[in-house]
Image (spheres, rainbow, N blue to C red):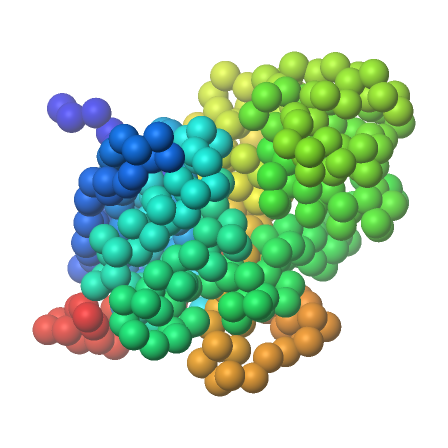
Length: 421
Ligand code: GLU
């Protein structure tokens, strides 16, 4: 028997959810496979004059509910299987939030930290040259993901505009403000999770100051630490790809943010302001109330799930808890606020950016925050209630919630017209 793919593992959640809904078998058949995945080899000129090639993909997983939406990841371990799994999650994430989108994802197999800025720009532009026929504001709309950012989105939007011969800002989200980006997109992933935790605080039994551990100190990790600290919660441990630090009294966020801004690891602050050494592998086992995985997939797994001490896990990363670990955490009574809900603030403000680009009228940051909070609270509340009524984990409830929307759309399309474009 062939080894299970990453996508197969992700599909376990679809199976679990489908047991709680009466839906047609062909709905599941439709959602079990990526609609199309395009693979190319990008060739770019390096600064030393040599040529180098990089594998790249774009997956449009399902477009039943609208144009496919999802970020582009630059990572040395990126693979076709991973891109499809991430695009599957985007399909459910957009349905959870009731955004008029399907799910997609892209990736380049590269370590962007090993490239110069000029090389990175050439690679970003090459990606758009290769995939421009797949993309479009009504077809497939990329955004940032792991190791990509607004600067890269800006180059990509510019390249797309040059190819089609007109400004088309709505083809990509997470752009710099100067190119039609939205206010509030920068911290949207963390802010959505923050609003969710605040809204469900009573139900989750949270009162007073929480001790928080954050795994991953990139965009989402830095912003969630800042937002929670501003409410008086204590950040007791953080990690990044190179190390970790802890402090029972609470870490000095300004020191951590300054270290990151200078390109150093959080571990470089050991010895300053009461920061103690912590092995990055032990971050998930730190004594805390709230654990925030904000790095990569599968960080909480069979071998370490039992050691989690937090009562609540907020998944700002995509897929940080494996299905086996989920069962272990469930037995321990740990509540997991799942990725497709907890980190959906990012794609929700991407949607706001797309709407603003299309109407050519831009909102204030207060309007962005209010609209994001309203959607997080609406969908978070519905999912929480469903989990309580049916005795489901919050994750399964989120999948049931999304699946019922997807099933309705798939059925409404009719049998002959499963694909829109
Ligand atoms: N990469 C983010 C995610 O995984 C954002 C996607 C988007 O804004 O389209 O949700």
